[in-house]
Image (cartoon, rainbow, N blue to C red; front, side, top):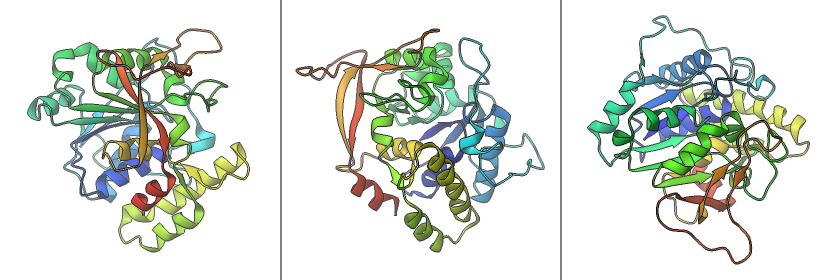
Length: 307
């Protein structure tokens, strides 16, 4: 697996899960802008890998801004100014020791043809750039999962748009139209992937390593932020973890439909709107440009696998 992230709190939980799950061989992390700027995102990945004692995993520098060149919008109220809530990760002593340039992504894919799964849990910019730079190499990716979009439900940044698609609608549309074997894990299912405070306490009681011990403080911060957004919500939605778990093909975790996905772009109020045909009578599509969309999540299966 190669994880593409904009390393805030839910990205951190997804990365910790990928590091701890024996089914996942994490080959690299591509880290770019999104919840925070790229430099903080890179530092946060390095911090987590330091805590996990996984200095062998390269950190690939991702994008700094959307494809349209506009300045990105960050979300300090949700993730904290540094991306990890109350935790202030130190700047690594060897600041760029594990960072490598974007060409490393292509080398890893070429070294593992038709074996690499890409899971993109941030803006789609870095993934779109990869396809624009080297489509022949990207065709050797086994499958791709992206956390993004919101089908038949409200958005979380605007009335209609989810944050990752809104943050770079041009890149999201391009990836959905270009990438074969693509699964979209949208807000309508990730919103149900809740970790409650009781479950956080349960995880914390079993924490035995430095990386496991940061889960509670960052998720406690995340929970308080969500209480401001949605008073009374039972826990914190683990949007990015839900996408990583989708890549494991866990039985009965998700239901899927296959549709052509488009993403609204431009200056209108509908920028970032994810579009697919879910009218009564619509059917699964086939062939080029047909993406798999997660439509239902089994919350009991999600929780049991998270434990």
